[in-house]
Amino acid sequence: DKRECDYGMDVIRSVITKKSVPQRFVQPVLRAKSLFGAKDRFTYFVSCFCSSGHEESRMWDRYAVDGAGFAIVFDAKKLFTGADGGKAYAFTPVIYDEGIQIDKTAKVIDHAIQLQRERGLPTRELQRYWSEEVEFFLLVCGLRFKAPCWQHQREVRIAVAESDSLRPFSHAGKTRVAVPFEHPAIIRIVRGPRNAGIETIKQIRDILNRAGYKGN
Image 1 (cartoon, rainbow, N blue to C red):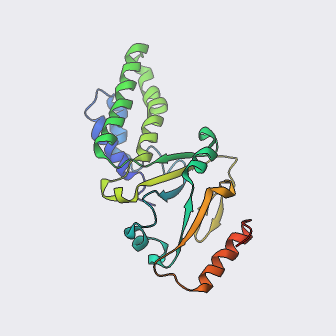
Image 2 (cartoon, rainbow, N blue to C red; image 1 turned 90 degrees about the vertical axis):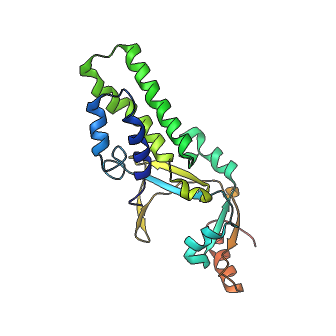
Image 3 (cartoon, rainbow, N blue to C red; image 1 turned 180 degrees about the vertical axis):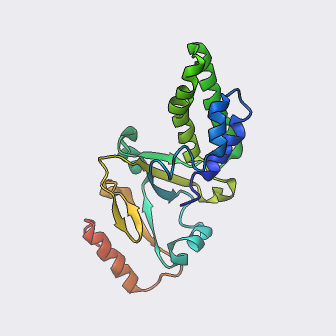
């Protein structure tokens, strides 16, 4: 999504200008066109899940071919366990509340300012400190922020950072990566409100059988 991370960066900008942050760090942040290089210097592969349930009609309207597709229902606990403490992938809910977004960003910046003072960093070290150490934690915040108007999605994300161990491949016009998970993580398949007929059931059953899900 070309708009991904833009909202998070706007939140960070709104907070950072009100704090005692070195201008040599603030000014590039204000001019930046991405969230510290997201979509530019590096890539995150993200899979989005809706925890509000398949009963949320607006999700069917916007996705799954306007209700003609399917919803795959996952066991969130198994996906969380599969993250292996973040080693396999990040598994985290999206934050929509603007007050919480600002509070989390402010805490990162306040803690960074406190550490800067405790370390007694000289002026020549400030740019490296903010650009290499603090920037990462602000990036993690921004990646989780989304505009309040989308809160009905109650989105949870799996995210994998680009690395040499990943083997990206192209499918349906997008670059993707394979993230393994245990078969019991899939609980059921739900047909969309516009998806009826025995033939669609057979098609999805065949897909599951080919993926290793046996039986009926």
